[in-house]
Length: 87
Image (cartoon, rainbow, N blue to C red; front, side, top):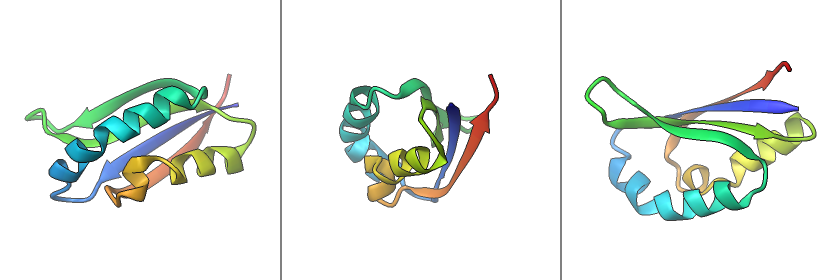
Protein backbone atom coordinates (compact mmCIF):
# COMPACT_ATOMS: atom_id res chain seq x y z
CA UNK A 1 0.00 0.00 0.00
CA UNK A 2 1.08 3.53 -0.67
CA UNK A 3 0.51 6.40 1.71
CA UNK A 4 0.98 10.14 1.27
CA UNK A 5 2.33 12.08 4.23
CA UNK A 6 1.39 15.74 3.95
CA UNK A 7 3.33 17.58 6.64
CA UNK A 8 3.03 21.30 7.41
CA UNK A 9 5.55 23.13 9.55
CA UNK A 10 4.85 25.18 12.64
CA UNK A 11 5.68 28.88 12.23
CA UNK A 12 9.31 29.94 12.67
CA UNK A 13 10.81 26.47 12.24
CA UNK A 14 13.21 27.26 9.39
CA UNK A 15 16.39 27.11 11.49
CA UNK A 16 15.30 23.87 13.16
CA UNK A 17 14.42 22.43 9.74
CA UNK A 18 17.85 23.36 8.37
CA UNK A 19 19.65 21.85 11.37
CA UNK A 20 17.60 18.64 11.22
CA UNK A 21 17.65 18.20 7.44
CA UNK A 22 20.69 15.87 7.23
CA UNK A 23 19.16 13.46 9.78
CA UNK A 24 15.78 13.67 8.02
CA UNK A 25 17.32 12.87 4.63
CA UNK A 26 19.32 9.96 6.06
CA UNK A 27 16.13 8.61 7.65
CA UNK A 28 13.86 8.82 4.61
CA UNK A 29 16.50 7.70 2.11
CA UNK A 30 17.64 4.83 4.32
CA UNK A 31 14.12 3.70 5.16
CA UNK A 32 13.64 1.57 2.08
CA UNK A 33 9.98 2.67 1.93
CA UNK A 34 10.12 6.16 0.45
CA UNK A 35 8.88 6.36 -3.13
CA UNK A 36 8.88 10.16 -3.49
CA UNK A 37 9.56 13.13 -1.28
CA UNK A 38 9.91 16.88 -1.68
CA UNK A 39 9.83 19.92 0.58
CA UNK A 40 6.82 22.19 0.20
CA UNK A 41 7.27 25.94 -0.22
CA UNK A 42 5.22 29.10 -0.05
CA UNK A 43 4.97 31.42 -3.06
CA UNK A 44 8.26 33.10 -2.05
CA UNK A 45 10.13 29.78 -2.02
CA UNK A 46 10.33 29.42 1.77
CA UNK A 47 10.00 25.86 3.13
CA UNK A 48 6.64 25.26 4.81
CA UNK A 49 6.43 21.48 4.98
CA UNK A 50 7.03 18.18 3.24
CA UNK A 51 5.24 15.67 1.09
CA UNK A 52 6.38 12.06 1.17
CA UNK A 53 4.96 9.01 -0.57
CA UNK A 54 5.86 5.73 1.10
CA UNK A 55 5.06 2.08 0.61
CA UNK A 56 3.95 0.50 3.87
CA UNK A 57 2.13 -2.70 4.81
CA UNK A 58 -0.62 -0.85 6.65
CA UNK A 59 -1.61 2.48 8.20
CA UNK A 60 0.10 1.66 11.48
CA UNK A 61 3.43 1.21 9.67
CA UNK A 62 2.92 4.54 7.89
CA UNK A 63 2.14 6.21 11.22
CA UNK A 64 5.28 4.71 12.77
CA UNK A 65 7.38 5.93 9.85
CA UNK A 66 5.99 9.45 10.29
CA UNK A 67 6.42 9.38 14.08
CA UNK A 68 10.11 8.44 13.80
CA UNK A 69 11.04 11.05 11.19
CA UNK A 70 13.67 13.38 12.69
CA UNK A 71 11.55 16.36 11.62
CA UNK A 72 8.67 14.98 13.70
CA UNK A 73 10.97 14.24 16.63
CA UNK A 74 12.34 17.80 16.46
CA UNK A 75 8.80 19.20 16.71
CA UNK A 76 8.86 20.88 13.29
CA UNK A 77 5.46 19.76 12.05
CA UNK A 78 2.23 21.42 13.07
CA UNK A 79 0.18 18.82 11.20
CA UNK A 80 0.87 15.46 9.59
CA UNK A 81 -1.93 14.03 7.47
CA UNK A 82 -1.53 10.44 6.30
CA UNK A 83 -3.70 9.45 3.35
CA UNK A 84 -3.81 6.05 1.68
CA UNK A 85 -3.33 6.10 -2.09
CA UNK A 86 -5.26 3.79 -4.37
CA UNK A 87 -3.35 1.95 -7.05
